[in-house]
Amino acid sequence: MQKVRIVCLDKDRRSMVSALHKAGILDLRKSALELADDNAAEHFTALSDTQIRLAGAISLLKAPKRGKKGKHPNIEKHIDAERLIATAKSLRVVDRIYALDQERKSAQQSLKHFLQSEDVAKQLSGMDINLDRLKSNVLSFKAYSAGNRKDLDALKAEIKKEGLAVGVVESYEKHQLGVILAYKKGLDVDEIARKYNLRELDLSLDHLHGQAGEALIRITKARSEIEARIKAIEKELLEISGSEYSRLSAFMEMLEIEITKARVSETFKKTDRTIIIEGWVPKKTLHGLEHAISGASGGRYYIEQLATDELAPTLMNRPKMLQPFDYMINFISVPRSDEIDPAVFFMISFPIFYGFMISDVGYGVLSFFFAWYITTITDPEGLVCNTAKIWKMCAISAIVFGFLSNQYFGLALNQYFTSFVGFDWFKSITVLLAVSVIFGLIQVVAGLLIGFVNKYKHHRKIAFGRLTSAILLVSGTIAVAGGVFNAFSNSTLLWGSAVLAIVMLIATLVLSGEEAGEVTNLISHPLSYARLMGFGLASVVLAFLIDQAFTPSLSGGIPWFIISLVLFLVLHFLNMIVSMFEGAVQGARLNFIEFFSKFYTGGGIKFKPFAAKRVYTKE
Image (cartoon, rainbow, N blue to C red; front, side, top):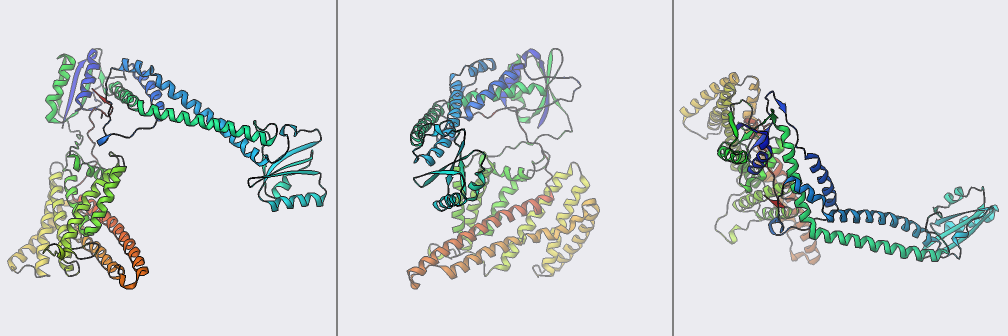
């Protein structure tokens, strides 16, 4: 990466900004020069206001389904800012969308009132009573809904027993029990109503007039008309979505791009007649950058390559298939531009560890299809979809290791279609444990060597501490393997390795300084990889036990066959879920803690060029 400074005339500002945006290779940064700060373009406010108006209209529409491969059929050509503002403001369909939405809100509010009135009218519709006449200088009236006949009968019995001046009019329509109490003004009937679980009905609602039954008919008809109108509005909005969503989204995309271009001036410095632009650019694109600004300024520019100790942004430029691994790495921290990218190693080791711990063709096939399904229903740019893409790769690794270990839902089936039998989890535990630890040794040593490279430029003492640690780990392993486990018979090799290990231990303690305490991890971290064998064996043993106990058989009768089949499927499913979870968690842990801790610093800044991803528009 190279930091550059561009000086051009103020009158060429807009053409320069457009050229830089179209080139999409410059990560703009605010200059530290002691000059006046530039401001956003004059039309920024108008663009923002137009964007807000258009965004509100689009939010009221429903996005249509995308075509094949997510492509949109209608791509609009980008237009300049002034024409864009004028065109966006004159879109009649936007006014129509807002008008429909306002009408829908008003109709929904009216519908709410009619539904409340309809509920009351239903309760009282069986009464031969005119609701307009429930007025008196002597009496008050209240309507209630009774929960059941028993409560209403108990209420009437108490009124009669106590001699209360309360009249009761009731109706029973379609399982709804309505009651009107007529009582002398001043009498508290609410306490009685609460005692017998009566729910008060509001007689003051706007639409309760005339006979209760007739009011119900009028209200129901009006409510149906409003509901029909709401459906018609939603249908029209859906039609607008189908015909106008892409076009409106195109204008929205143009506005967002123009707003970005209008605001970018805030990163510039200025004099009376010039503007100063600074930023980072990949070295291989320097010629393309100069060509772009030369054309935009008519040759009236000056460009300088700046020498700086500032940390350059990290360029994440990976093949599309491997880009999902960036999500998991960036979840911890963005790699620094001056260190080796850990994603390259992670995308190799993580699937291997995951597949080794699952080691079952059946589980691998099912997890592959689960992951594939998730990628079809989630946002292609989102974390879930990208995690599922990694899962698919890991599932393939599980299938490979499942074939090598001859595991198909815990069953051995290789012999039926190939002469290859593979390794046996039950008979090769010691070998598999050794293989797991060797995985750890290789990865930890690799991490230390990468740490040496990363630290060499800035902290050479610590860098050589990483190198001596790597030598200590290799020589110590040879000495222990030969002396304790008789892996080597050459005494010269053993004694030489032991002496070298002691010398490297002392050198590591001296060179590592504050990090000397990490020397103990040279033993614990490689041994931590034994979990690969442990979790893999646990998964295989559980699958074996499930097969032994619940493999379906007709010898016990059809009922037991069905029960055992259900248990077989459920238990294997649960074992698969646990295995996948442990494979993902432990595989990530071994990489992030045991491996990355040897060299990875992180804290980088991702390279973000001044550009836009177009979906609905083109230059």
